[in-house]
Image 1: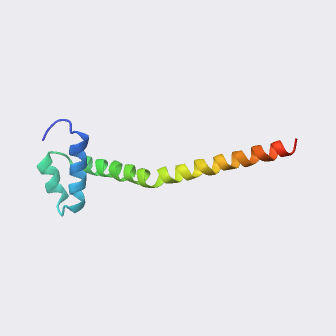
Image 2: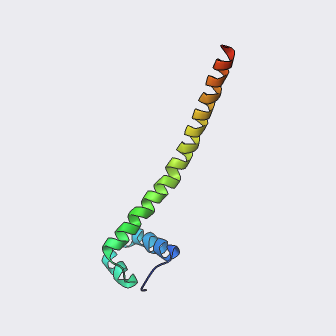
Image 3: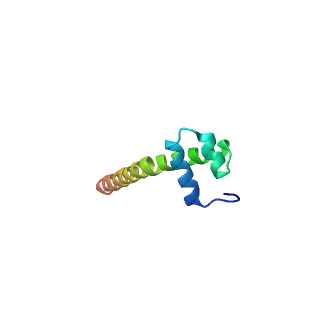
Length: 80
């Protein structure tokens, strides 16, 4: 393989690297550097972490803030 890689190709290489016992050989087979694979792997893992962690926390946080805003508004209306 040479030139630019599609997202699907990059993902396939990264996933294969998780089970590969010889990263250098894997990189040679695909014509990429070990450093490049490690950069893709880091981005892949960071993206996965965000997708798994932040989205649910973000929604929970937004609901909490929304609930607090409603409670504050209700108290303000009650004190007038």
